Amino acid sequence: MDLLLTGAKIIDGTGRVHERGYVWIDGAVIRGVGAGAPPQTIRSAAKRVDVAGKTILPGLIDCHVHVCLDGGPSPAHQLASESYAMTVLRAARNAQRLITSGVTTVRDLSSRCCSEPSGPGGVAFNLAQAIAQGICTGPRILQAGSAICMTGGHGFWFGHEADGPDGVRHAVRSELKNRAQVIKFMATGGIATMTAGDRFAPQLTADEMSAGVEEARKMGARTAAHAEGAEGIKNALRAGVDSIEHGTYLDDEALGMMLDRGTYYVPTVAVRRRIAEDGARGGVPPFILDVVQRVLERHVQSLEKARKAGVRIALGTDAGASMFPHGESARELVELVAAGFSPMEALRAGTAHAAALLGMQDQIGTLEDGKRADLVVVDGDPLSDIAMLQDVNRIEAVLVDGEPVVDRIAVTRPGT
Image (cartoon, rainbow, N blue to C red; front, side, top):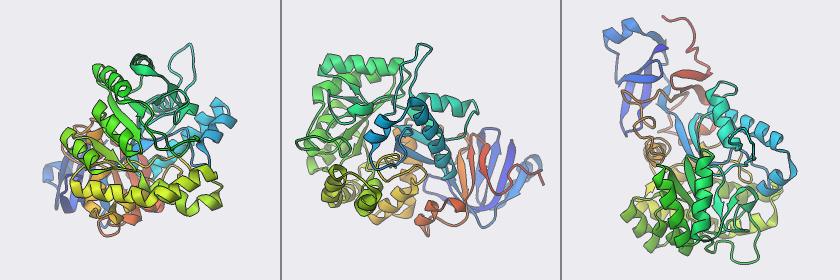
């Protein structure tokens, strides 16, 4: 499609704003972005759609989702009580909710797997294939397969249990064999897995994760660590992971290590606030609700400290976890602004910075010449009101690789 969108406010993801500008899309690629009227050579060549009064921004990128979960009160109970086929159907619905909310790329950080002789059987992997083949609609998916956890550790109910450096090394190789594009480690316990002791205590050791990181890097795969408590966070940092997920108890030493190593922080605060505020009414089990209510304030403080320290922060929501259905990624942008980010900084966390974490900064995350044409047209200005992105009715169009997936502005109408 040779398409020219004109008249909109353009937030291009680099920190620049183009007033009453244009975006020229040639097939799957952006070929021009600028303020004011487009050059005559473009106007005469492309189908033109006037979107005056709207805002165009890069497609949002959510770096922490679970497509096989749907925000029910207990993730473990959901997976234990339903068939693999039902999980797949839920995942397809979740993908639809994500794309209609303006999220064009996600990183799935552990999904249900199934052993199949004909090939990889993970929900996220097969959902990504189905989207690419046009069987269903959804965002681009980078998937981790099953997270690596210690035996009986956090998320064992949909993870890959492994012990010792050699065991973790083998587990990583197995996940890579099954087409994982990123490897996730469970560095500590977590809220959704009941244990008798400290829920945020270290689990996988630094040596175990170091072996896993080494194997991942051999194959060019990036790594992430679920890490809640301070010592477990630092174990993951010593192992060299690319991102810390949640990071509830970041201390000054951990922040310094993240700055030295260039490690990203994916805070996922919005899901915790949702649990704390609505979990009792929503039937969230006390073993989840109690710990979230106890640590939420400390979690927010970690986010505020990370921002002030200059740690690189990317958008991630833990979508699918308790009380957080897919399609609500913009709630995390609101949390970032509440923690001191400007709306522009929050949007960059969900676009350019998220793309860099995924290693896709040359392809997505900004609206620039040569980038993939992933963009969202919204009715309103998120720089004035970041919360407006929570209203899916104000998402006017969503394009992935130049193709309209959501289209309320008649992008596909005959050209003018």
